[in-house]
Image 1 (cartoon, rainbow, N blue to C red):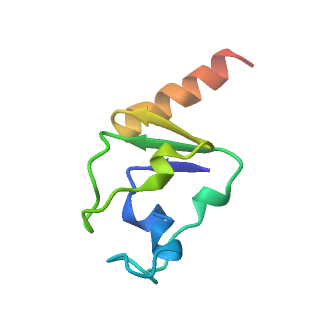
Image 2: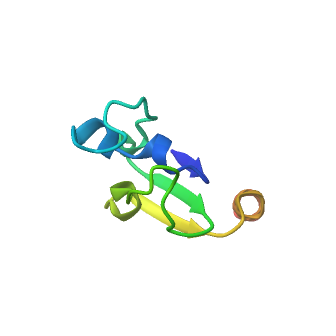
Image 3: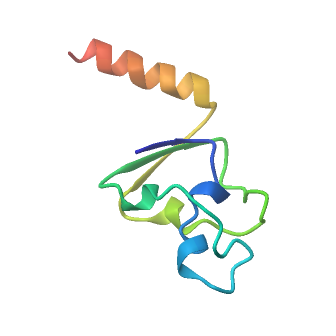
Length: 82
């Protein structure tokens, strides 16, 4: 899975912690993917202001930077390594 700039909408806490401010909120279950590439400018919290454990998960890879530039760089790397 590739996540670009999202935070609360991919936060598994919405599913796992009934006391969380986002408990019960519909999320995209990217944490269930074998590998998750997350492209974000920083680790700053989303609108809910809570940490996202997905960012530290074993199956997650963080790529910090501008989303558009990062996607273009990844696509270019794939083209070069065909």
